[in-house]
Image (cartoon, rainbow, N blue to C red; front, side):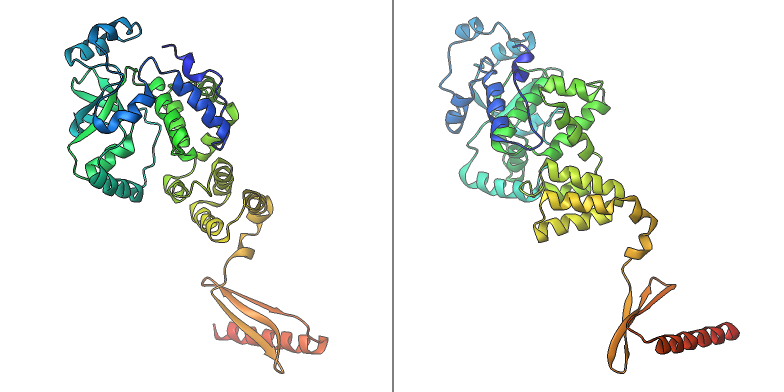
Amino acid sequence: MKPSQFAKGFKARPDTTSSEKRTALDRINAIDGIVDLQQVSQTAANGRSSAFVADDQSDANAAHESEPYRAWRRANRYTVGQVIELPLKAIKPSPFNPRHFYLKASIAELAVNLAKQGQQQAIHVIPDYEEPGTFFVSDGGRRVRALKEANKETVKAVVVDLPIGIESYKLGYDLNVQRDSQTVFDNAVVWRRFLDEQHFQSQRELAEHLGLDESTIAVALSIAKLPENVMQEMVARPDRFGSNMAYQISRYHAARGSDATLRLINKITSDDLSTRQVADIVKGRASGQETQKPVGRQRYAQRLEVKLDGVAVGDLKSYGEDRLELRLRGLSREKRDELLHQIETMLEKANTQN
């Protein structure tokens, strides 16, 4: 299988769209030489694939197999596309897993379902030939976690012949796109790691290899600058925090920091703010004018309403440990001057006592 088969014609957008799903499906269809996904999904429950053929037929159609995989397949009498039972202790995470975030509540819910109904869909694994008998998860990390939580000992799996790396990443990524389980936050963390570990020399090279628009990569890398605890607050609400909203959050965080950003995320959820509304907030709060007058927006600790002759004319506010602010309005000139004189007298008395 040629690497270009995965990326051909694939143009993703910042948020997952039906177009992105269709093109991801085209790339999934390109791996038919490795495993027939439709047959696998239909037969995972009974543990065998209807694609089962004799070993000599498999060998005749295995021109693109790697030598280690062919040796393993023959030794274990494995047929391409066959669903087999593997011990969970033999399964380990892939360093090229497209997912980074796994919600505990989601894993727990799936564990309950697996305990009742059993595993209905096989995972995809890749043999680790440096540690024979162990396998990397190419697709199905969530199911593996849930099976462990349900105290299961085995997992139904299909073994695929892919090198651990970008190609195995693409397979998992495409399947996740089809299931709506791939998030921009997963992309942000993983793509940032690809560049940090120098699997690619630039975001342009990464975009070209994955078949994505460079702007999609750039947006994700901006989001990757967010602390993980901030991203965690958004991961659970993919309906509210797609890539466009997350990008605005990253801009806000750069100007305001984590605490203010977490408050904004709560406000977005509680007030159902749109991306446009958040963009307006970012533009206003990230301006140079705010950084010059941060005290003006500080929350007061106490407020005392000031009344004269039963009419409210202003308030007295305290800030922190050392600031008072008195604001009065609607006063006659005589009353204003009288109050000013009283304040001056009070201050002079305080200075004398000190």
